[in-house]
Image (tube, rainbow, N blue to C red):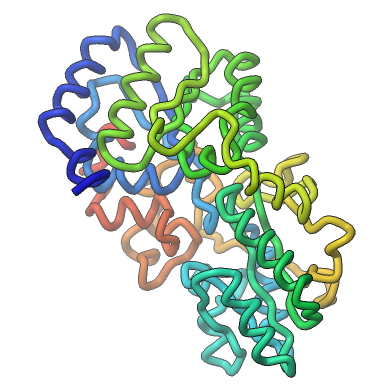
Length: 369
């Protein structure tokens, strides 16, 4: 099967592991940015098969996980309004806010609906003009084009009952923030291929040059990641710090220009709060002034919100790679995918969920810990 079996070949995987082992002369720490990469690394046991000293650090690349509590609490408040149809992808429904989640809000009577595209939400607004339809627009650069197109389509249809609750984040500022931390031990990055398929990789080049860190754009299959790790180790051993593209079948340096144009037309760059990282300058997207009529945050004044993270949850430290799930005292006991205390356990791309699905415990985490 093209792009599946051929990227899971065990013979090639062993060759790449052997090549990495032959290259490495000292310990190296490499951070994979994306939660999809994390799940492949953990599910396939790649992080535990790497040569001694090569450690994967799991980064803040889960869009559900980095969505701030303020956004989740605001979503719950908006969803509870009479006449509102609140729409979202399914992975956001069980993410805990300060006191509850969208699934519980639906059980209590809120009209919360799962959609598979923001265009589905636009269609609901068209079919049900008596309702105010709100779509929870979260994620990295990957999901921004679809949300931009939804706004453009709603504007073309003249819909006044459609809006977005926006919490978009941008990857490069997060990488810079991590590297500015004096305690940062990351020496190279695996960049997310789907982000770069949209935005390209030119924004990573100043980061690689300024901080002297190799950055390798990879896909999400086992051989993608193994080859990306090998490329990163080769750069580290040779003293190079460049942006390289492993994901050549899907990514170009310039990215997808029509998608970028839609995003730049509908959104503007703004400061953004990240769960685990705090407020980062120029690290998010907000609706541009000409599309402010579609901004649910402006349309619905929910007042001041007091957000409270669960006292046992260490998601902030996990998202920055400072800790792993097995360091958490609640992991696997009081915090499970059925009873999550924090976003990294409930999200389909969360590090805690990946560890739990793979049966990782403090005694089995190995080099991943």
